[in-house]
Image (cartoon, rainbow, N blue to C red; front, side, top):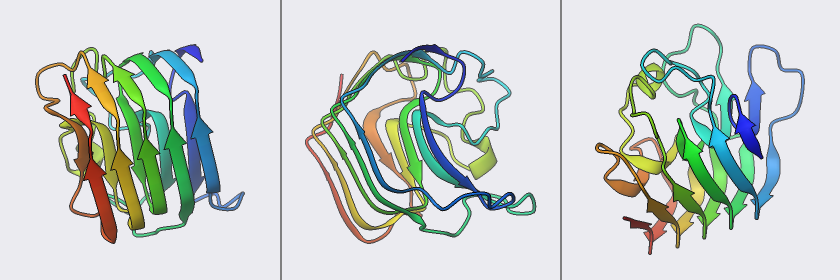
Length: 173
């Protein structure tokens, strides 16, 4: 995937439209993703599109913050290389069981964080962001390099994540 306007990989169910089933048994493996989020204006963006790889549920218009649902089931993101993104490398929310392993992210938020995350009431501090998820949550052996000021960790797990959480051997250079 190269020169992508929004997310390179997007698995999102929209509660408003309800045109399809919720994403489940998602396997995103061994992709090379470069120059992502080119359309995103980080200074003004309040979009649901938060990562080069985005897993989420779009809530109804009257809901602020993360929609209270865990219907993205069995998410597996492994061995991807993400380079030069205006977004987070990986953003996942509303998951019931998620594994993020062995990914390499170079130059996340390459133009700065700006307003990304404002719609959900948080400021990104990691290149991999997990929110509103539960069950088995594993984030291991991921490497981040070239992060700008403000991104001070490889992984950011928001308080809305619950369940059995393993966050280990992630590196941010």
